[in-house]
Amino acid sequence: MEGIKVNALMLRSADYGDNDKILTLLTAERGKLSAGIKGVKKAGAKLKFAAQPFCFAEYILAKRGERYTVTQASETESFYDIRTDINKFYAASAVCEAADCLTFGSPDDAAIFTLAAQALSNICNSDECLSLIKFLLAALSAAGYTLGLDSCGECGSHLTSAPKMRFDMNTGSFTCWDCGTGYGTGGATYNVLRMCAGRTYEPEFITADGRKRALRLLREYFAYKTDSRCTGLSEYIRLL
Ligand SMILES: [Zn+2]
Image (cartoon, rainbow, N blue to C red; front, side, top):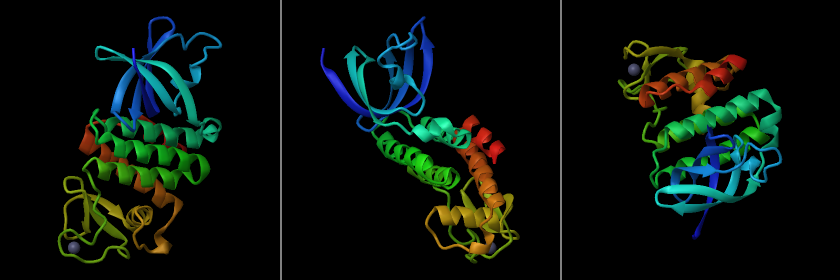
């Protein structure tokens, strides 16, 4: 039986039988797939690490029919700090959950794989909140749900200095307060999102509260577009 080598992130695992697990792996080469892994619940199992959350590794898979089984794995990056810091842990959980919801087992998944691996590294090594916002913006965009951060979608006015504005869930764009009928939001949210998207922004609007509001807006938009609730993201927002 030939082994297939993939670079993958372990997104999710489910118990299978007494000692085995089924892993959901997001791979660079074959998109998202499920693979069994044997004996990993036994003490001292050699591949235990490969079934842990946030494992980023090179996995060797055996394929029989349509089923994959992990036969070997070697860790690429350990993201150790994610396991020792509760805020980083939940931010990383939100990345894995969102990556899972936005991938469907097609070659397009590779873009989300790259963004998720980069996001875990950024969460580990820098500000986890900004890293998470950047990831959600980029991953939503890669999945076809780009959040529009241009001027008002109706009249074209610049919004960076507007204290109040609206966000339209359908179009994913912002409008002046009086131009639209969307969800009420403000300059703090808009400017934090612009900053994280690498656009110009008004520094006086950048606050800790603005980051939290930006994450709440992203959570609602994500749920609206994907019909799924990201519980890791809610836990993270609660911690802020
Ligand atoms: Zn307007």
